[in-house]
Image (cartoon, rainbow, N blue to C red; front, side, top):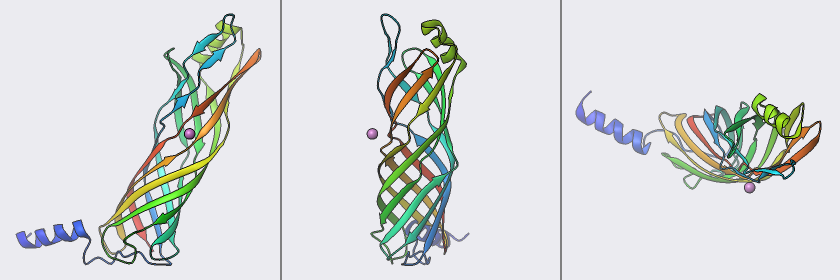
Length: 227
Ligand code: NI
C-alpha cells in the first residue's frame, strides 16, 4: 500500500470521515459483543445460628462473560433508547474468610437506557451517555456440596438451598461507536448498575438471611450495525 494512502486510510479510520456513520432519527443500531458482568459486591455478614453464632464476613461473587445483544433506536438525532440484553450470566459465589465455595447464581439483568449522542447527525465517532433502569432476574441458585457439608457439621442441616431476591435499580452508562464502514462500527460500552438483593440460605433446621449489593460494572466490546 502506498504510504500516503495508508496514512489517509488510517486517518479516515481514526476520525471516521468519509464514512456515512451519522446516527439519525429512525435508525436502529444493533450492538453485539462480549459482555462481562464484574460485580463490585458488598455483602452483609452471614450469621450461622450456632451457639455462640458463627459469623462469616459475607460472600464474594466472581465475573462472568456472555454474549451481549444490545439493540438501540434513535428517537431523534441525539436521543435514543437502548436495551442491554444478553445470554444468562452465571457467577461462582464464595464464602469470604472461609475459603469455601458457596455455590453459583444465574441471572439476567435487562437494562433500558435513555441515551444522549452529543454528535448525533454528524459523521465519525459516536460517543454516548445513558441513564436507565435495571431489573435483574436471579434464578437457578445452587448450593455447593462444600457449603452443604459445612452447614451439616455446624448446625446439623441435612440439606440447603440458596435463593436471592430479584432487584430493581438505576443504571448509568457510557460508550462509543468507532466507524469501520458505512454501517459498521467497533463498539465499547460500560454500565454501572445498582443491583441489591437479599440472599436466603434455607435449611431443614432454619434459615439464614443476609443482604448483598452486587452493583456490577458491565463491559461490552464488540461491533455495532446500523440499519
Ligand atoms: Ni447498591
